[in-house]
Length: 174
Image (cartoon, rainbow, N blue to C red):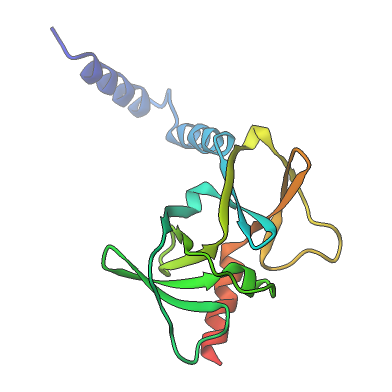
């Protein structure tokens, strides 16, 4: 008796080779299902809620030591060590020109630059169908935000990580 998974693979291979199934359409279906499964993490930085696509987060850490860096911008708290890998710690509240955070909670970002965001607290996770995506009010748009999400009575700006990291890189080049 033949393995059913092996039969499925052979059938798919035949359908692809014969042109009945187009690989591009399979990829588009995968992308659209990924978009419908999008999840937002809402967290606090001081008194302000922010949102981030949960796929941008590698890990959430608590109570890790941060080693200060001399001559760094005030929002760059230092470096933390996670499994032998150094991560630059950005105090997201200080970056947004609010009071510096004292908490020891960090979002390790799933990014090649090895960056962690210092935050106050994790609020909740929201699936895409649970929130309303919004653009920010005129004049509130910034290179640091990609719109906002609204759930219940709360509106949380969505962080634009690339915009934030671009600013960090430019501050280090000065």
